[in-house]
Image 1 (cartoon, rainbow, N blue to C red):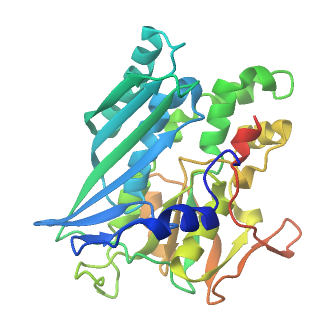
Image 2 (image 1 turned 30 degrees about the vertical axis):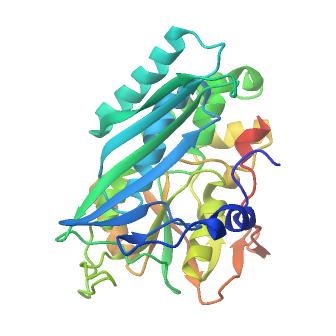
Amino acid sequence: MQIGKLTNKQLEELVLSRLPALSSSTVVGAGIGADCAWLRSEDGMIVTSSDPITAGGNCAGTLAVSVSCNDIAACGVRPTGLLLVLIAPPSAEEDDIIYIVEQASAEAKRLGVDIVGGHTEVSDVVNDFVVISTAIGNVSKKDPVIKGKAQAGDSLIVTKTCGIEGSFIAANVHRDKLEGKVPAEYLDEAATYNKYLSVVAEGVCAGRIADPSGKVTDTGFKASAVSLMHDVTEGGVMGASYEMALFSGTGVLLDTAKIPVSDATRKIAEAAGLDVLRLISSGSILIATAYPELVMEQLSKEGINAAVIGKFTDKAGIYEYLDEDGKICEMPPPGADEIYKL
């Protein structure tokens, strides 16, 4: 099988179609484009999500905390707790484990998240570190909740710049392959992009904006001005856009000329032959909203850069993008992330 996430077709056929029916205590379960599970609680809902880090190398501890917390933030919820599973290869030294744990601890402290448990072992079934994190957050009955699906006519917003995580991994784990091809100042810059990996600030900010119309969700909660959010992980901006539209039963039209990319990320992608729009991009979040001006204004107040990069359409199943020449092109389904080319 191909390295990387399963394709959407594989995920549906091999995994999702074989899961048991959900109980009444689960509001949202596993699904393509769904970042988190939502479980009913006495005071509101519990939100949880798991993610593995398999290509993070010596950055695995930082990335493990960031990506799971980002999933919770993509629901407009502040993460509060984290479970961490660390599987080390037999070649690992004790100092390697300490390094990853201290990385994870520093990132959790920075985000204000408690690491409350997990599991650590050495196994000969892996030849590199695998770190799996499960984040947890809570929604009270007074909090606005995102509607759950993008609607035709919604604008698509992206925060910060795309390719943040991919260029961070490239500059730290694969620097030897890029030296001489990318100016040192760009590699040095991208090596510090861990400071941009979290989307907790923008996710919570956007998700907590109440719908100006006063709508409520199907679950009876006050509705957010945001229809759906999705943090940009494997598959990049294009993959995440496709997944949001598929999950929502809409079409999507992405304007690639409007997607912000830093100079360092662009230089690294060009030198390595990577498609920056399909490069793993934790640190950015996609936001579907009928109120783009309101959401952009609130993000700006928090010092968060954002741009409108497309829209959701009523052409269900039609996933398209405008290329650099303004030509409409068909957007292929997500495949293996570009980072695996390194």
